[in-house]
Image (cartoon, rainbow over all chains, first blue to last red; front, side):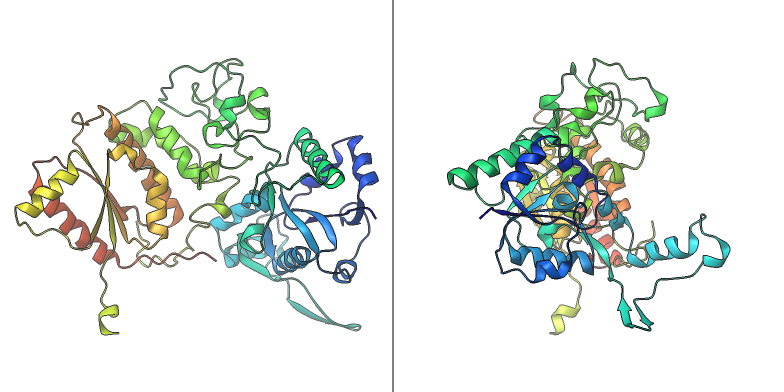
Length: 333
Length: 140
C-alpha cells in the first residue's frame, strides 16, 4: 500500500501550493509514490473524508498557512490527529508570515476597517458585518470564527518538522521530497523532531554573491530613491536587506535580483526573534555616535517593525502588538 | 493576599561589569539607598545586551528594563557602548510600535565611581515605573 500524503492550506495565499506544483516533473514521482488523500487546492476532497480516516492514517501532511480562524484551528487539530508526520510547510505555518502581520491590530479594528471604514466600500455596503449564524430554509449555517490573533501551526498543535520560505523554493521542496521518499522506501531513520528541512543553517548573507565592505550607514533608502549597484552589498548601499537576520536556503534569490532580502526564510538557527536580531545587526553598522543623529537615521527606515517582522511577527517573542488603548493603561506617549 | 495588591515594580537591570556594576557595588558599600526593585544581571559590556534580552525581559514580567554602561569614550572594549546607544534608540522606537511605553526602557552611563548616581537613577526609574503602573502584555 502506498504511503498517504495530505496537503492543506489554512490562512495562506496559495503560493505554497503553487510551489509544490512548481517542482515540475518531480510531481509525477510524488503522485506515483504517494497516495494523495487530501489536497483541497488541487483535488476534490471533503473534510468528512479526513474525519473518516483512522488516527495516524496519513503518512505525511504538509500543512501550509497560519491559524487565523476557528476552521484553520479545527483542521490543524484534525490533521494532527490523522497524520503520522505533520510538517509546517512554508512561512505562514512556521512563523505566521504575512497573515501574521494582522497581529498589528485586533479583531475589531480589522473587521471595522474591512466592513465599514475601507474607502473601496460602496455606500450601501458600509457597516454590513458578516453574521456568525444565519438561518436558511435548509437549517442554520455558520461561518468560522475569526480569531483576535494569528497563530502559527506549532502554537496550536504539535509539529514534527518545518520547511521555511515564502514560498519554499522548488529545489528545496525537491530535496525534501526526495529525502522523504528515501526514508520511506529504504527505511532510513527520521531526522530528529523539530528539524528545519529544506533550508541552510547559516544566514542569507552566507549565500549572497555580493561584495561586502565595512558597513557604515548614514541613511536608509527606499527602493524608489536609489538605483542599486548590482555587485555591492545592498546593506552597504543603505538598502534595507534582512540578510543578516535570515536563514539561508533560498540561494539568495532576492539579492540576486537586486532587491533586499525580505526575511522569508525566518530567523537563522539559535535565534528566537528575527526583528530584534536585525536591530542588533543594524545598530552595529549605523554610522553615528550622536543619539539625535542615530534617531534621525532610524527614522529613515520605513516601518521598522513591519519590515523586520514581515514574516515572523506571530512567532516572535512579543507575538503581537498590544491592543490600541490596550493593556498598557498608560499608553499615552 | 493583601501584599499582592501593592505594586512592586520588577526592574531588570543589565549592568556592565566594568562601570555600572562596580558603581552599584560602590552604592552598596557606601550604604546609599538604591532601588530594591532592581534585579541586576551582570554582563561584561553593555554592548552584550542583545535587543532580544530587552523584549524577553518585558515578556517574562519585567515592568522596566534598565541598562547601565560606561560613559561614552570609557568603554572597556572601546566601542561597545556606542552599539548599546544605537540599540536602545532603536528599541525605543520598537517598543513604542509594540504598544509599550518606551519610558520603560532606560539607558544610563554610570562609572565605577558614581555610586551616588546609580542610587539616584535607580530610585528615579522606580518612581517612574510606579507611575506608569504594571505592564500587562496580551498575547491572544
